[in-house]
Length: 127
Image (tube, rainbow, N blue to C red; front, side):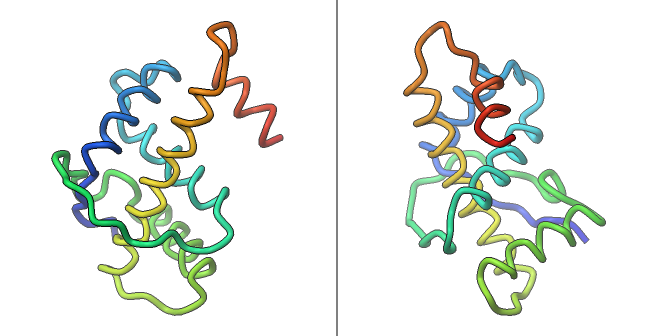
């Protein structure tokens, strides 16, 4: 089992590039997307609303999670949503949490001064 194809919004892609640069994950887009998913699901009390956005970048099958990781992510989403979900709905919620996580991370980066390090900020905030 693995995540299906998901279309990231244009705004999300721009924020992803900023986050990858800030965290020095320049060639590691999957890791940055996973961080955004975790940030989104950890930061939101209830599931994010679906938003219609223009898309450009497609996240390929299995990039976010596969195997045991997919099962873990799926059950984290089901726990937040509060009802069983089919695979397509899991992918939809996964994308929503990624988009929201990117939004939260971008606003946190924007709030830091030039001397602050976002990775240290994340460690301090979540430890």
